[in-house]
Picture 1 (spheres, one colour):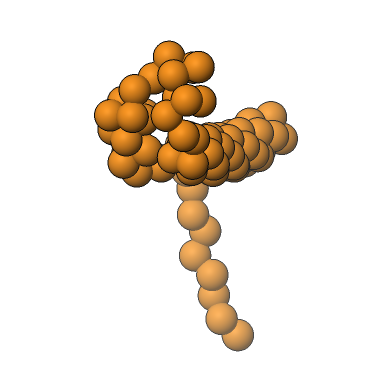
Picture 2 (tube, helix red, strand yellow):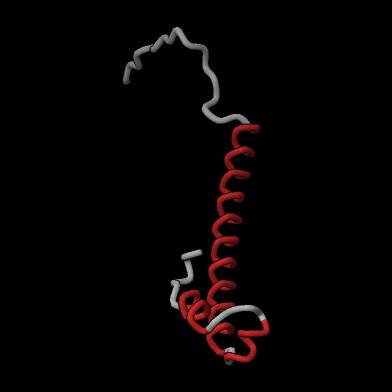
Length: 82
């Protein structure tokens, strides 16, 4: 027969996570996932727009008020750069 020592604590027993805390954690995690998805969407959109800009000829660039040099500078940026 094993004897177990009784332990006493001055702090009352409180659950480590409450339902509210758990919901907040889940919401924060979901928010972080949405934020990550939003950034990926922004990066894909930048890549797509810069590729389209690179394909424009000088006449179309003039229509939107850009020079070839400005277009080249913009299209040379990496997708995560603004």
